[in-house]
Length: 244
Length: 247
Ligand SMILES: Nc1ncnc2c1ncn2[C@@H]1O[C@H](COP(=O)(O)OP(=O)(O)OP(=O)(O)O)[C@@H](O)[C@H]1O
Ligand SMILES: [Mg+2]
Image (cartoon, rainbow over all chains, first blue to last red; front, side):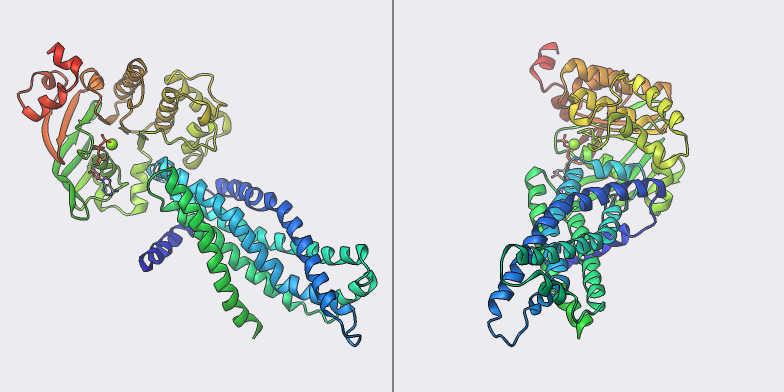
């Protein structure tokens, strides 16, 4: 376990180098933005809408005192979506989707000697393969999360359209009440850290594979499990650091 | 010329290479032969630096490869082409992009110049119309040939091949052997081929090193290998029914 961590650190030192050829790096970078980011937008949108709607309905059912105004629903949806649901839950979903993809892609390259082939050519394979993924996710995941926040809020609003739990006016009024810009910054800092964790851990798990197809499968499971655990752990640490 | 001087390699307590000293000569197809598990792949990986030797050192010409830093090695690596057992083509790239890859990484040639070089290399291996195919669309023999084309795209001084003919039918294996041997002569490369295919041995073995249980057991050429008195080598050479009957 400790030696694993040591190997992870050593790998990261190799990842964070200046790419051999910037032109090639940028090309890879945009390919990864598409593979890891744009292709995840669909599932993120769907999940976010439902997430927002569920939070809204649950809050509305729990407000039974006439003293609490119904605009609290909008307020609660906004706070939970921005603070927790979008950055953390969506990052967990991405850990599953993106993490397994990265680990199996790099793991397959390892067992079919493609990584050795890069090394023989004098290329730093850790940098060539992992760096564009890490940077692409760190840059694009904040975009995904902001989009997710938008869809989350829309989800809560849709409830007002299709039910009579609260009105659209109350909901929007709630969303706009007591807003602190810092919560968005907090969410985006978390997102960037989570993006790093997902891509670097999954890249590492793929990179150290030995064996064949079965080991690649195992690595991709490990990638998802470990990224998720680290996300939960760092969620706690960052919340302590940033909100207290 | 490549020299390995007194190299040993351990995996834990298991000593896989035992004090091997061997020279691989320029313009010749140098073969490493031996039974499965004798340490051929480990030897080749040590030579190219994919594995680090525990004792001894490796020279490329007059350069001590074992003492170099990563950056210094990079220079030598640009002079090395390697053909891996499974081809190791990048499966997200087409044949053309695979062959072009080293050029893209290391030269500032224009796309036209690179394409010209790619076509030249693919012509060498008789794959003129395969540019746009993906590795998943190639047969085993084609994969090996594309891998050869990629290995020679940078005009290497040193060519390494790990079991280039394994998994191929005898005829296709012969084509690959011919290619390797012709390339070596034409471009004056120092070629190191690791094989247990006796057909290759007697066809292209300019210099043969027989590895037995991690030790360098015998050296000679393709004529001597058939007349040797060495018992272990004899057992290896005449292990198939066909060779036994011929003898
Ligand atoms: N990474 C490794 N870790 C531990 N042991 C290894 C490793 N690589 C090779 N070995 C051991 O080294 C020995 C030699 O293996 P090697 O792959 O060099 O054999 P080979 O001569 O190439 O055989 P084959 O003809 O089957 O390819 C084997 O006993 C193997 O178990
Ligand atoms: Mg081998």
